Structure formats: C-alpha cells, structure tokens
Image (cartoon, rainbow, N blue to C red; front, top):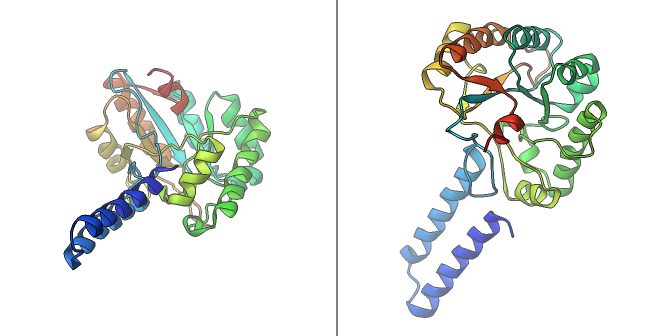
Length: 259
C-alpha cells in the first residue's frame, strides 16, 4: 500500500466512525474531506511533500558536502560549458536527463559518464502532462528514460528518478513502489529557470546553502529552441562560494552514501 492509499483509507475510517458513533453533519464530512484534499494538493505540487511516497530531499546534514543537480539536458550549447566548469573545479554532479535529449546528444552523455558524473532519469519526453497519465503509460515513460541512460552506464540497475516539474501523484507512487525507484527531489532551488543574472542565481544559492543540500539547476530546457545561458557562469560562482564555505560538490549517490 502506498501512502496516498493510506490517506484515503484514513479519511474513510474517520467518516465511518462519525457515522457509527455520531450523526453525520455537514461539518463532520466537510472538515476531514477538506483536510484530505489539502494533503493531496500538497502531495502533487510541493516537490518535497512526503504524502504520496518516500522521497530523497537532502543528504546528511553533518557532512561538508552538497549535491549539484542539473535537469532537462543534455544541451548542445550549455552542457559542455557546465562540464568544463565542473572539471576545472574538480567537482562532481548529477544530471537528471531527458531521454530524448540523450538520444540526440550521445557524445555529451558519454562525456558526463567519462568525467565521473551521474546520469539520473528525468523521464524520456518530459511531458508536462505526465502526472495525468495512467500507470502503464507512466511506467513505460520512466523505463524508456532509464533505458536511454543504461545504454551509457551499462548497468541493469534503474537510475535515480526525478519527476518532470517535480509533480507527483498516487499513480506515480504505485509505479515507483513497483519498480523500486529512488525518487530524488531537492532542498534548494537555484531559480535559474526564472532568474537570468548569474550573480543573482549564485547569490540565492550561496545565501541559503547548508551541508547536505541537493541543489537544483538546469543545463537544458524541455521546450524546443530554449536554453539556459546563465547556468554555467552561475555554477562557476557557486562552486567558488562552496569552496569558501568548506563544502564539496558531489553526486547525489555519493552524498547519500555518506549517511
């Protein structure tokens, strides 16, 4: 049973208890239903919400390391610049890639692996309506994205998964449980999807960062013809600031192994 099913059963149990013990009133029905709907909405829209499934939001808070993560790539223009910055700094990161972008840029996928970074699954197509898909379609999309990664890693193990736009729902919880997926979200958003100034992006991250954070950035875009031109320079500034704070940039899997 997934957590969303347990929430629904709890609601039904409350309503049944009220019906058996008390006369059901409008308030007696509306209040628990409203609480249930609020929790469900939180589960869907708040990336770190735990109501549907276990999530990895951050790593251990007592180690001097963070995980830099990049979504929506690889991108022919931005990803090489990001990799150059990481290499120059001796830093590692996790790239939550869109499968169709991997297929389009296999040389970048290979470079990510060769330079010691981690490939994570951000679905194959990054459909913004994936959260409304039925479980079989959702499972197929996740497995197709995983397959695009496994061609480069050579591993049969399913990669870490991050849902598109951070949206979740009960069907995803069931698919994740059935597949044994480890679902990764983030504890610090760089807002590089909104902010175009590298200094402002870096300042946001460095003013908030704590040991164990999983930091969200973007090296690609799910929409054709759009890119993230500020990411590489923002990353350079962030990595410099992390060094000054005594924090190392590692992959998500490396961060979690320190628990």
